[in-house]
Length: 257
Picture 1: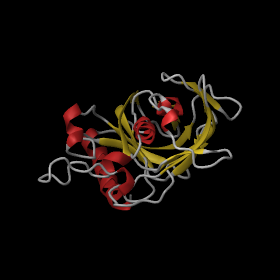
Picture 2 (picture 1 turned 90 degrees about the horizontal axis):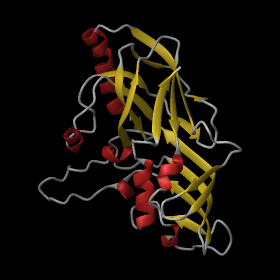
Picture 3 (picture 1 turned 90 degrees about the vertical axis):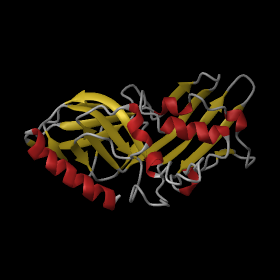
């Protein structure tokens, strides 16, 4: 993450002079959904599964706010949103999504007090462009039940070569860079950072499982947790879980307090 972060820090520094906004320093925190209680999250999916999550942790490597709403086509060519970055949090945090309590990032966010229209969540533990990254991005455990089965499961998600999309055109080998798998964007918002306030990011893992059919998991043990999501896109279940993790709409929400 260091290489790309350094360049964005310059962009954000430039936006102080470009937009005329005042520089601000603010706290940044993340949490699970506001209604989660008891350290579990219950989910009823459209595929007929009742999911009880007992572990749901997410590593957030960085957060960015942007002044503009990018056009849909811009994301096909660039991992960095077009427009002006107005605020950033560059220090990572492992977030317990089964707690509604805000969990503070280890350092303050910085930026300007301009009105932000979109946000980004970076799911990385190092350089966003690195070919490999051993960071555990999501750590999940729970039980899924339908009318005929009860499936205790775990999932450990990393984002490296295991999530790389092969190019469909040999003439365009960089059409799907790995950074696109690590950046959740654009997340629509409407907020204005202020000095001394707190940017709060809530993450609801419910939609991660919206299209997951647990019947597609392979049993690896006779004792719980007996089913494991493969850490790649080799099965529809693991691919759909990863797609849900990266869904910007409905999963990630920003507020400023």
